[in-house]
Image 1 (tube, rainbow, N blue to C red):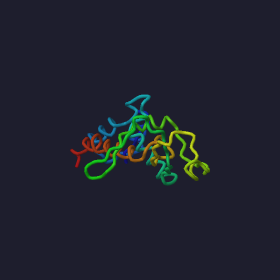
Image 2 (image 1 turned 45 degrees about the vertical axis):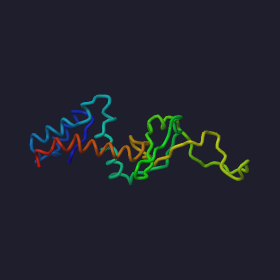
Image 3 (image 1 turned 90 degrees about the horizontal axis):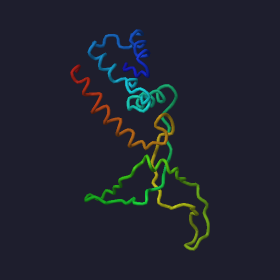
Length: 164
């Protein structure tokens, strides 16, 4: 087990309950050093807390839920096509999330171009699949998972390499 604790007291309680029995003392020190409580009031925003939150939702209640989420594209939004034909865009997802754009349902109306969607906003929106619960609610799945993988690969795993 790799206990994730919001206070040093809770971490000590986990040790007393034998959660890390058989783990070398040096490895326990590493686990302790990675605890989110070291970040004070920002502990709930650490990647290790996010991983723990999503893991607990998944293991104790149900699969993680997602939904289609969107936001207004910034005025300077543009896409670029790479040499291999892939389309890319650089977007500030946090700013987009703040815009709280609506993605349908839109009424179908007769307009100057024929039947189509009636939209009372700039039609330049960006949509993505987002988590629908937990501390990552409304956050882009690809961004969250990519950063979590980087965190584990670059921060957590190097701390434990000497034990393998």
